Image (cartoon, rainbow, N blue to C red; front, side):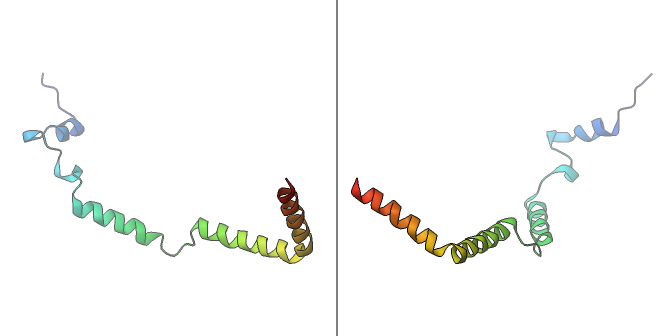
Length: 84
């Protein structure tokens, strides 16, 4: 009795040992895939932009609130380094 080969094993066996055409990665398919992935996320704000803007906002808020204290801390630190 002959055993039927599964579809998967039939796909693996091709003349000249090449992969079947539907499994080959061609430059055209690679470029099309990369292009579609890039275009699909174009409308979203990247995370690094959001982190940068929020950091700038926090620094500005702290600077406005504690300007005189920050100047005093910097002056003390510079004078301590200069005297050593």
